[in-house]
Structures are given as structure tokens and as C-alpha cells.
Length: 311
Ligand code: AMP
Figure 1: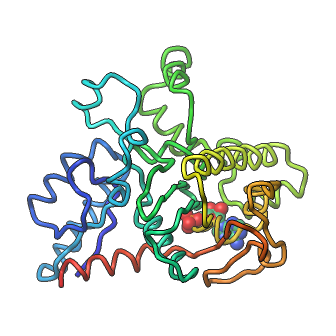
Figure 2: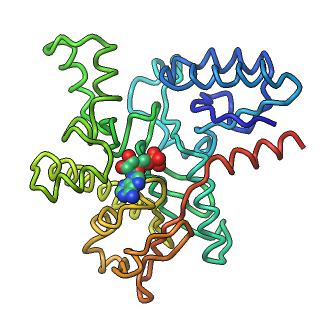
Figure 3: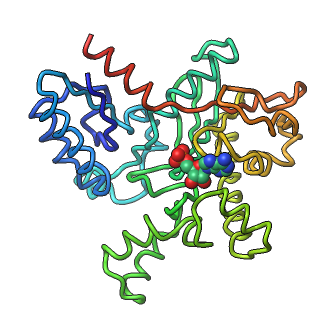
């Protein structure tokens, strides 16, 4: 099989799906929901079907894991009729990673997946947080598109929607210019010119104030989401860092959870400084909440799901 990561499954797809002409038509139909991603995914699908015509292609949707989000978490407070007509709701993304990592956490802890309350922080160039209660995602930071939520490499994350109107009305930017600004020229890159944490750390060490501010804004937003998800979950068993930044940046992990001893979160500095490709605990033995680093592996997760459907 050829497994394809397809970013947006809309309201139609939430299972790994063998790709047929009809499936391609439907992915095309919902492409306006993810104009930067789904058309690119379709190019990959067409290429695989052309060069490997006898091999089944399977679409694994980045939105699938969050399909069952509670209504209260999935619904934007806008006019119901408009929302229904245009499929406007919070879908969530990075689902394959949140699913894979949260299961790895249960394996690592030797606990039942369904018993655990977890926060997963997928911090890569794109970034998202999720809250998973007893095996079911109850909230996630990305919304109708992968633009909502955390500060990312080049994406703004959360904004006052009024700001978008202002950019159009007063700054006279076109819709496409605003799209480019918010998706490609914002986030860490917009704040300090760099979107790689290695470069940002070097700039901070050299005394660059923009880099310092970019880092502070990033951590501020991240902590806001962690706090929100702790309240939503009520009891938290594990907080897990994954993806490029989450797996590699000791300072981000330290600052994201600094000063939370009263909430049962104690990071062990020595464990947190270890570099490894393996799942590991970075909390102290007397930390009530386990804090982990678990490398994600979306390719493996997509391969497994594709193999299961084809079998
Ligand atoms: P991803 O999208 O998961 O591949 O993550 C890419 C991001 O991870 C890069 O833009 C960097 O900001 C970050 N990253 C990768 N390696 C390191 C590292 N050794 N230290 C700090 N950040 C890293």
C-alpha cells in the first residue's frame, strides 16, 4: 500500500480510506477548507496512482483523531446557519501524531490508554496541543484550519478576528496577502526573522531583543493552553512533548512548565537535559504528573493504519 497523509478530511472522512476516484473527488470538494494542503496531498495521490497503478493508496486524515471532539469544543460561537452551510467548525490537525504519541505514552507508563488523562504538546514547525480524557480527545488547539492555536514557526496561531478585518479595511491587504502574512510570515519568523529554535537561541544569547520577545510570546501562549487543558481535564496523568521543538529543546520544556510545583509538576533538570531518540520521563520521581518526551512517528502510524485497511 501507499499511505498518504491528507490534511483535511472535512465532515466526510475520519477513518483511513482506500483511495478511489470517488474519494479523490470528495477530497477535491473539501479542498477549500485546506487550500494550502489538500491540493498538494492530491498531487502525491495522483503520482502514486500513476506510477504504482496496482498498489492501493490509502488516505490517512490529519483531522480524523479529533472527529469526536465534544460539541462545546468543536463549535465556534457564530451564526449556526452560516456555520452549517460552510462546514465551519473546529476540526483539529496533527491527529495522527497526537494519536500515536498518546498511545506510546500509555505503553511507556504501562497503563491502560482508556484510563489516562493526557496533554500532548506537538511542537514542530507547526504546533498544536491536545487534551485527551480517558482515551478520547476533548480539545485541541488547531481549529477549522491549522492556523489557530499556538505560536508556530511561521503561523500566528490565535488572533483577534477583528485584526484580520483591520488588515483588509485599513492596511488594504487583499485576502491572499493576509493569508500569506498569517501562514508564512508570522509566528516566530514574523517576530524575529527566524523560525528555527536553534537560530533563535543563538540570537537570544547574542542579546537580540526581537528573538527574546518571540521566545517569550511562544512560551506565554503555550502555558495558556497547558493551563486551560489542566482545568478541562480536571486530573492530569501525563504531559508529553513531541516533534522537532518538543523533542529537542530543553529550554522550551523547562519554561513551559516552570513554577508549577503546586500543580504537581516538577521537572528534573538532569533528565530534561538528556538528548535521546527514545521515549523518556523528564519529571522528578516526586512529580505527581508524569512529564515525558516521546518522539512522534507519523510515517509509521500512517503505514500501520494503511496496512490495516488493506489487510
Ligand atoms: P518538525 O516540524 O517537527 O520537523 O520541527 C522542526 C523544528 O524543530 C525546527 O524548526 C526547529 O525549531 C526545531 N528543532 C529541530 N532540532 C532542534 C534542536 N536540536 N534544538 C532545538 N530545536 C530544534
